Image (cartoon, rainbow, N blue to C red; front, side, top):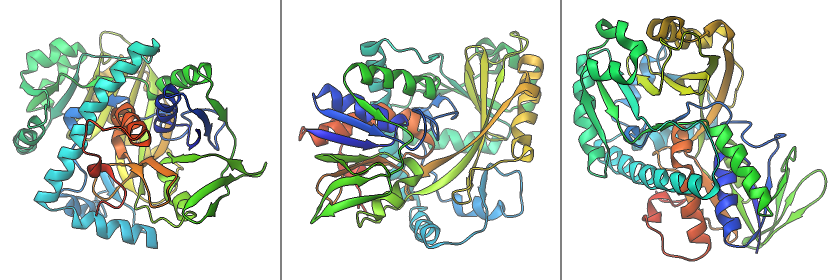
Length: 416
């Protein structure tokens, strides 16, 4: 079978890998000049099944409302209005109940842990290197109420295998010696022992090379202008260089999936949530981070990637704008200086902003649609790196008609 995959990010390339293993002829298309040039380019670099809560929580509406007058909020809403946001927002609000938050969080967490095992399997099968760090991830708390609330919430994740525990400051310093000076800033910490760090772009680029060696074709710098349909099937993708025919099509275009799905007559409730990141060289190695973590007070994440440090922050609902200004990185830089002092050369930081494709409830869309030969692997939000390989495995199993290890109804398009 000839399968065309739209998107050469984490999800598209992982889908290509799993489907190529089945012996199919795979073509991957992307408008960018190389794999992992959009959301997967400079993400948080954290694989965190132990922190896989759904954003659609009872507290979310109030946090979004507060962000209108708190410019430094980690979760932000930039007022704008269009029909796509209105539809997505109403669906989001419907999922901000305790019961739905619980169900959606459990669905995400199951997929995350399943995917971590698949990521390890792919890494061993292929021998690819992605600056992997398996020492766990730290969660640092500045507010005692937030610490106690988080500990109660973690009981939910522990139902499906979360490996996260409170630790003392001495244990924090044993993991991250550079934080020894920061004891007075925090009231407690937790350690996600099965969480990891790693460079998503390096993983994607390396896996793309493995795919090429297995016969996968990549057509880059190619924009999809539309879809040709006959009845309930896609027959070809429209491009400037002519139609591209295939037997089946996989939509893995991240935040831009709804526009392409619409051309097939599908309404795909995904909206972009913007995030900002910096990547800077390691300075004094004694003060630099050694693994990964999240400052829960500032909502700034950090991850050590060889001789570099990645720092990220903000979930901003503001449309399809990927521009940024120096002010967008103020909190990230301030937190980096506060926690790691001269351990990171912040005046040499590279800046980046990307759009994370969020579903209203949290779990992604993986599987078939009402268009018989159009499949989805999109909508993973901030956990695309964590969910990547598991999602691709679920997609391949469904396309091959095999039984799956997870209940695919939890990730099916049209589930509500």
